[in-house]
Length: 355
Image (cartoon, rainbow, N blue to C red):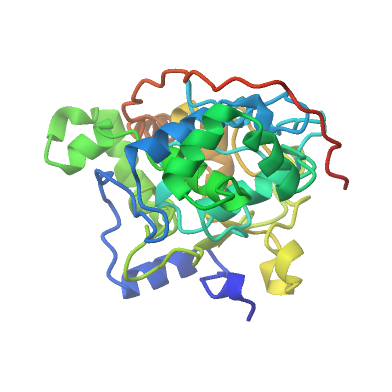
């Protein structure tokens, strides 16, 4: 099996997730830890975080200076851009919804199909993707940033060497900043720490239903997205679900849920048709629209769609209200983000990356 698919690619019923998680003795409900896992080859430092923040808001990381990382992942809000799919630097829309970056550091693989094994790998891909930053190549990016004295100084101090500004050092800096994007102290977190009244009665009922109906078969753990990095699942190993699981509903047609076959496009394995990395649910109430294609705008509708297509359950209005109340309890405290001052230089022009 190729390196990227040494993790769990689940086939069959969603209940397979529960079987695996139970067997491995996961604590299915976990409050957000104080810090995410940090790779040994990219330790966090205040200077690197600050450099990554500058790069995150710098339009010079796009081929024509038209967008920043924040354009699609607005950390001044929910960490996404509220669009079904996002246009890149050249105006061409991507294929899938741009998910939130808040708490993403607890994910073991990135992208909807789990093809990126780390934040650093995902960032490197986005810099040169024709539908994202569209930079032609790493040499052109390095040359552009090298022409900015403020960046030369910072990269040299952090990474040393004769040519410290590389795609790798840029990705490491951006990943360091993104790993600080945590939203602690949600009502759910406080409830798990013993504050019984932190969650409303409706939210507590919703949590019970969420578990009883089988939603936690896949949506458990720190991000309610399966195991966080640890003994059971390491970085670069994915946790996946079949979606839609039960085909043939009106929802599937209305929201085009099966038009994109997900992991299958990477593996070409028929068992991986409609397989997706389990998405995180923290802050779900403020990070719509929902699903891989961003086709559902409202959370209550998304709850109905998931119940029917994954569990073959038609929920009543009261059940939907309580489950939504539970999902709203997952909204944490967003630390304020202050726009950084960017180092100055004359702009450079480069040809965009082709298809």
